[in-house]
Length: 258
Image 1 (cartoon, rainbow, N blue to C red):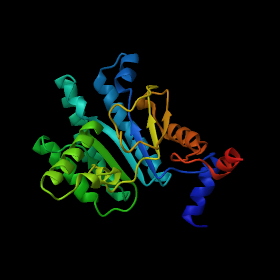
Image 2 (image 1 turned 180 degrees about the vertical axis):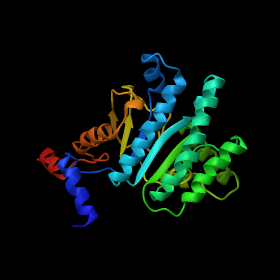
Image 3 (image 1 turned 180 degrees about the horizontal axis):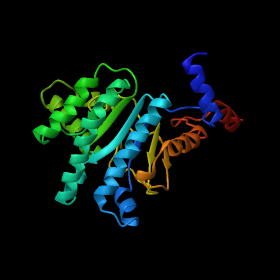
Image 4 (image 1 turned 90 degrees about the vertical axis):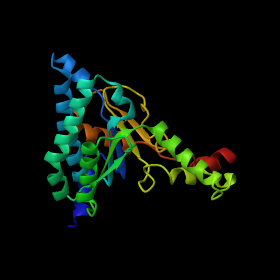
């Protein structure tokens, strides 16, 4: 029996009729997880990295094509300096410790977000992860680092405005496709499913453009507690959603017309 058939049988047994091509994760709740246990925030972030490893392994197992993780937002720089340095240190250790495993698992790493003002060591680390894994054909792990959706859209608008000013583009040629082509995610499909942990129900400046037709699942657990079972629960919820992308189902349309 082919591997794809085995996967279909396994997911069907779990109550998952359709699997999203692209899942995006808002990994929220590290600080609250630590506070609830009387631990420093850094320990919450460290446990959050362990949860990220579990999420990536689950995505590989379930044959998800794209997994985007909101690792560090453009607004996170405003956090206390010690916490920012700790988060950057965790990112450094994650890539250093996990890059070989990701590469061996045929995972391709992509990074989205502003790079212009990153320090050379962080920029070099991100570019190394992309370079080492660029030929891989399995899961694409999209790391949103120094990322903000409003900033991303504004950058796309500036690029189009410059083209208009240079006479290379007419204003009436600017449409949704023109904007999408200038986003960081230009060659990445929009997310089908966005999962946010901690019970909060907002996007927090994450993939605002790309989330136009995504399904949302908000889990009450804090991110360090996220595991394969939580991923399965979110996929089971997704499988019960009816995705119309703004359209009306033909049967419903005919019934309304009559």
